[in-house]
Each structure stands twice: as C-alpha cells, then as structure tokens.
Length: 140
Image 1 (cartoon, rainbow, N blue to C red):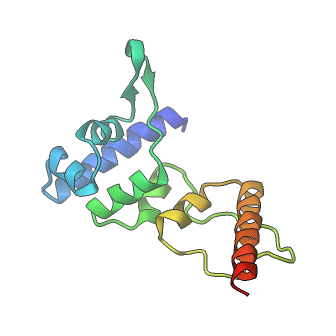
Image 2: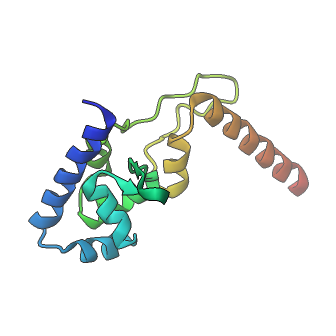
C-alpha cells in the first residue's frame, strides 16, 4: 500500500474511532488540543496547501500522542496505523551509551528523541553528557 492510501485508511479508522466514542470532529480536536482543520486533514488523509496542491498529512509525534489521548487509545495503535515504528532503534552501545536505560518514557522530549536517526540521537546524547559534565564541574 502506498503512503497516500495508508493515510486515507488511517483517516477512515480515525473517523470510526471518533464516532464510536460519540464525538464530533470539533469535540475530538478540542480534546486533543489541535485545530479542527488539522483533525480534518488527518481524517481525510490529505491537507490542502497553497494553490490547491494536495499534500499528505505529516503530524508530529506530539500531535499523534494528543490524538491517541483524545480517543483514549494506546499511542502504539495510532503509530502502527500510519506505519511509524512504535519503538525506536537502539543506538549502538558505546562507552557513554545509555541504551540500557528505559526508553519507554512517554514525555514529549522522549517522543521527539525517538523520531531522530540513530546518528542524531547519539549526537544529542553526547551533547547532553557534555552539558551534565559541565554542570557537575561548576558545582564541584
């Protein structure tokens, strides 16, 4: 199935989920703290851009998390419907790697970190390690 069709299927599923809960589109969007037009884009599987060009939706992980919350669905179910991985690839283990830590944290930062490539996630980890080391040096 191509990506366009996948978004259409997701939209149909989203409508079903919303209607099963007795919610109007406006109410679901309010619950998710997103605009009604964004919710409509997700339900139709496309959004209109400048010049009537149709684009595929590309919601952030945060938006998808809000949609899942509004419909009281596991985030993993929503992600699976659009073909996004439900678990991040683990960064390669190195001397400063924290791969053994629990990465199932549902915080917004954790969601954003999971969207990064392995290389970028390792870079962010090194930056954070350096910042923590600097903070430790300033305290001591």
